[in-house]
Image (cartoon, rainbow, N blue to C red; front, side, top):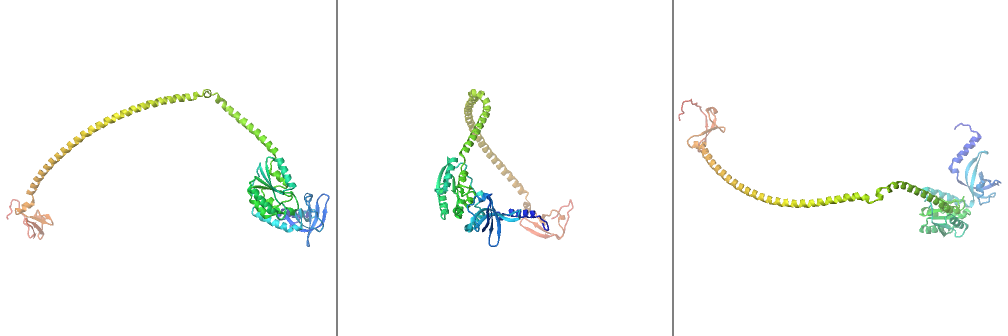
Length: 450
């Protein structure tokens, strides 16, 4: 946008857009002195708001001026609620005023705005916390002044729109320095009685009269209430902190009574429509089921229900007969089984006795056979012992013979030894060691001379 060339109208339009899009300039409080006040025949108010150093043009349209309860005068110190904008034809910045308050409440307004921002940041105004209004409340509590047109208007409205509801009135102070504390105590009583919905309301008045509804303690108590609460404080342009924290806000007490109550004639009309719709639905369902039921009613089982069970009765009779036959057969088989068991027991005893006798005889025969084998073995062993004794080398030694060994081997030939070999000679009463000095070989046919 650098070095761009603007026309005057495009520049004023751009400045207006900047002002209109700046949220900080759309709802502000400005303190100043009234000058050049004009009450135009159209109902609009034009004036200048100034202080010691600056001034700014203001306009208050007829829709807001008609609701202002202050008669503006030249030199009056006021606080205005306004938004900043640009009046393009004149290229001038001006304020569009919605409310005007005497400057004596300036500090209160600043405190109000600060408290409002604090509660909003804490989430006391959040929509998700607000409880839904009951559709058809039958137990309504009203917290308002004991006497006043607002209370009568609410009672008249509820009686006209929803006469079925039981309305209980809780009188309370609704203005003055002790009003907020009195309202809290009254709401505590309302909360303990568990009404469906409570209506907190009062008629219009000066801002000073409504200031008790901006009390922080009252706002926090309403926020934590379990009972649904609807507020209708002052006129449509009056908005207090209790309106922000309540579950619903109406512009006037009468509007609040209308908000929490349905119109009984509309409810009756709605019920009649539902009734008619329900009757139509029931008729449709009946017709549909009649179409299904008609062929069933003509079925032979419906004409003679016993036919339905006749086949089952026959089957049951056959099964009973079969069961009786099986029971008889069971008894017969049981008797026959007992008979066979008795016979088997007797036969088993006979066979066991016969086998026992045979086993005893076999045992005796085995013992006799073993004795015979034992005696034969002893006789044979004696013969073998005598024969071994006769052929024993030791017997030969007793007759003057000897046995020669070399390295624990019997020398059977002169070729088994060499000269100078040491040998061992076994005699009948001991052994001697000798050295081979000479070998002499015997020729066949010669006899050895001893």
